Image (cartoon, rainbow, N blue to C red; front, side, top):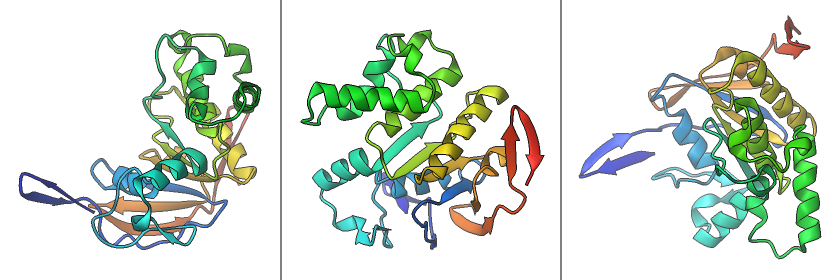
Length: 230
């Protein structure tokens, strides 16, 4: 992946060759500027690679039309970001409903989907609250519900605990672990070792390259706020 600005070419990603299996929980780690967010944007179909090939479910993503890209992102992929990206002065329900606005489903179906997503993150009791009335941890749980509302196969989480205290961050990681246990593929971008070790596999990046691809052997599992080794 090469970015070009006023004739200056800057390589951001090179030689990334790996496979993510359905149902995996993968962490991508690396320092700032290592290329991990660029990699996530390519995998999440937010950016097209300038060279190489990206196969999604065996299909070459480079051949997807803009229309197809939009549909795949909406139906198969959910995104969770560090900054939550919720609409302020808008209710929790309406924020979660956003990905459904282009659907032709009856209102009752969409309402059922929104409430199911909110229940899955323990936020159904906040459906009428405005997003700016929530704590940081609650905002991130609403963001996860929004990512879940179309029941996507893949969830991308970019530094989902970066703006949270340790307790709220742990709650978010428990939710992501639960979603993975239910069959969702989780791809997590983080610079925090503890957060990364909730995954089953970690890609380490440096200067746009993958320098290691390791399983998580002594996986840390949190129970009631305590950390143990498994």
